[in-house]
Length: 117
Image 1 (spheres, rainbow, N blue to C red):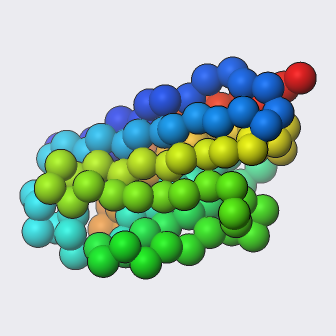
Image 2 (tube, rainbow, N blue to C red):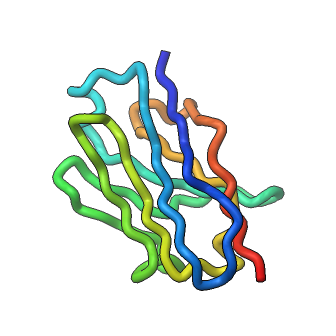
């Protein structure tokens, strides 16, 4: 069974930083390394938003609102991805999820990020 387990969220003040981690299980290494991985976030009442993605070779893409502040990385050997979030803003408040496109309907519990003064 494929699982995604997100961690690292928390409560921070504006300008603060957090580092999110995503551990995967049930995905064989060749499949994990066959595609990009992505971080998404969701606010209650709104659609899930793609925040950042990273290909197997390390090419990254970000939504405009986080460019220059967030950095996505991956550890292919351990089948994990990470999201370093700096200069956090209140509008970054959301539940953050990771996902592999081979499993578009599989989502973890997410990790809550709250940015408040």
